[in-house]
Image 1 (cartoon, rainbow, N blue to C red):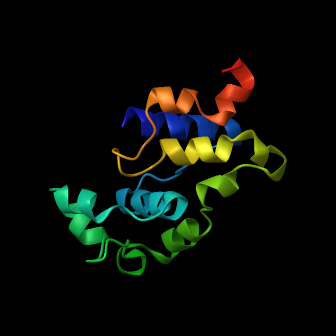
Image 2: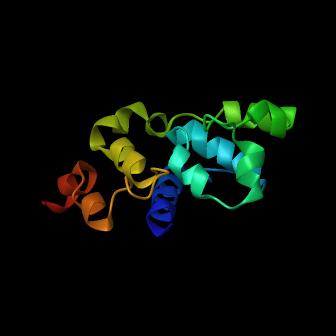
Length: 128
């Protein structure tokens, strides 16, 4: 979870606002899915949390319309894919790719700290 948190913090420092602005667990999961893609079925199958069964269908997609209020649905629809959170002028910096690698839902696919530091975003700044 630490690497996921680091990705959120970097995005929040860049944007100046919370990445997933919510206090509702079901809405939080929907925002994450919208920003970085669906939760891997394997991860959902391993979960023992009842919220998982409540929020996701058998294919692994969030049941947005069945579990969220109309206001929450509108909030989730405004969430952009993570790469689009980076301003046009900064897209070549590698920040979008760095965020994507740190915010991967599946921890097996998420960038390690070493991989993140070797990303073009940091390599262009620290001479790696």
